[in-house]
Amino acid sequence: MTNFNSLVLPSTLKLESGNNANAFYDIHPGPLGNYQVIFTNDDVNRWARIYEDRFPWAPNENSILSNVAPASIFYYPSMNALKPIRYFGEKPNDPNPQVSGPGGLARMWMELHGPIPIGKKIDIDAKVTDKYQRRGIGYTEWGLDAYIDGELIHKHRKSWATTVSKEELVKWPEKASSPRPPEMNENSKILGTLEYVTSQEHVDDLEGPGEINNHTDVQAALANGDPAPRAQGALAFGLLSRLMCEEIGDKFYLSGTLDIKFVNNVFAGDTQKAKGAFIEKNEDNINIYRVWTENQSGALTAIGTATVKD
Image: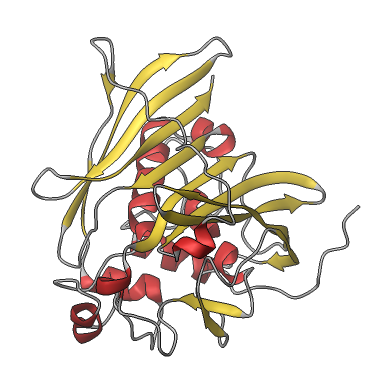
């Protein structure tokens, strides 16, 4: 039995203090530690507000569940498990991203194995699971497994893309992309659409009070080469999680998966539309869905796969 650290990580905000870091050079495969997290009613209310979701929260209006937290709420615990690293960004003397190349959250995925309770300590086992290269970009994967009384309730993973030197890339294996999302066919059943204005207020709320960076500050965004503050990928991920909960309900919340790649930037003021389609039921009796977000011009911004056990 793992002995979990009694340190309780912040649940829906960044660490109060910590270091700025490079996601590729400063993070290495291996254990990050065992911690705990507690989601309060205030945490859940804040998370619901960010995504314009219901509170008190439940997967949908037909749910039989109560006193539970949204499925996407492990975003910050997985970031805070990197302690003392608090933020990925430029460090002193680092070149501007306009010059050095692309970087940022590339993919996020989760497995749902049970309800996420409010007000109860949840044990967290965090680790860096992989580091590799693909098409000249370095990728770092990490995440957490969450337990209640020794029973797994949730897995959350992230992949961060970083532009690194050729000398560093050769040290790491080349890895193929994860499987492409399933294509729609003539039998695909379209799910409902959620429309969401990615307001600066929502972006600021997710980032947390007092944070000044390219998500919250116009001048920092312009210096980063962006036309406006850049919205976090977590907004698209949480919106698609909300879509699946709205459409499928408790079955998705208790036994689903969601795996999303971020393909185009979203900026404060953009409208995101979360969409989905049922594709098929596979031989293991698992329902497969294609899910995606579009901006107000119809351009794809995130795409992936959701599954639900029947």
